[in-house]
Image 1 (cartoon, rainbow, N blue to C red):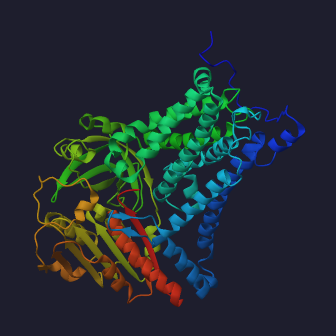
Image 2 (tube, helix red, strand yellow):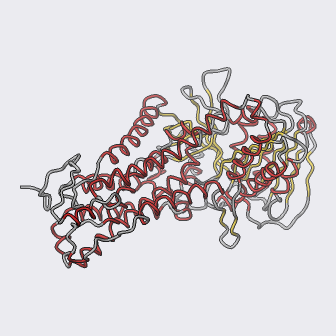
Length: 598
């Protein structure tokens, strides 16, 4: 006995042959280039793939071209300086909406998103003929042009969604863009596919309502059931990707992602494999689904092999630093990494409950040992106020002997230090626990002179250990090093709760004081001035960074912290790039940033 409604065999491919039993004029109308459903995958699906590959190709050429041409004389020409400044301006320039306390993506990212939006909607809506002529009495079949156009554009996008999301990322290998920065395009393409899926579904619903057989279709056609089963998880995943929702429910939502993806792909494959399909032409090419699964499963399989069989299980110890910052120490003899890289940790202690099912990204705050085989990975983590969050539960494990940990990584740009070594002056800006990102970079620099380090913290207890950590990594004899530590709030005890919002580390509450403390000891006399300035609010980072960029011609800027801090530093760098672009001067300002959210 067969399954209910499953009265046709599952098929991997159908012939795609266009059989028309209408009049010659009607067949000619139906077989038009933009209306022929039997060729829709070539016209719309392949066009989408070509567009996505073209975008990746342009960025790949730019990336590899910059690597191989930086030694050419053209690299120092006025034309190339302006081209490079324009590219960096587009990657730094953003817009801040004070009313919503929201920073936009960079101007370049928004332009690329707008190009994609125009392409997808032009391809789906531009050809016209959304419904077949004749309304309920149409003789052209069940599927309508807008429906199958949208379906194949969505299928063309599908393989790129896991490609953009993967930590082990094929697009990163080609373009040099880190997987963190590709996340915004992963979310946008997912939303595009969701909207196109709705544009595929609603015309079919409208068409069958007009025909009066929607109830019969729902009761007798499995495609309607599997279609709903595909749309529901897709809607959930898209809505949960919205920034405020994602940041609030990150830990709980992550547990649901894999089951929802499994349900979505299973029903998607079923609805596209059952014949006859909703489309009267019976052509829904499963190659798109196979390509998407191949990309996803290959990266997941590699990551699992590396995590479970190469790096294997490790054990970490937890301690609490002044200012309520959690320090995680993880001895390892099988793991090597570079400054500024991060790993995904899966903490397996039973008190962490559902968090053992998810992995979380943490920046490594130490360097591997050069003298011994065993190294210690150190992580600085800011706990949240929620008692059920991973970081709060982790803080309560400070007295535990060890915590079992699985390591996935390392990920991130491994060449930041080598790039910074090429600049005359280096500027570092950190907010809160973002200092952990900067410490290994400082330690890995070939020369520690012409440094400006700006750290913004909420309380003085954190300032003490941050100051000590910076002094530990600065070499004796470093010249022209200025370290400024700004404290924006009052002192806190180690047991005080902290906010779960990274932005709260820089909020404007605290003691109303403009007092400056000057610390003078041997370390500071050798390593430069260390100023701790306690005041309400935070410093004007835009003006500070602009001032630091005035006296040098080749400047490298690195920043890590909450999104608003990153916005200020990016704005300052964008202003410098605009000045280079306008005047054409032989000056270079390079920026690299890591924020707390993707």
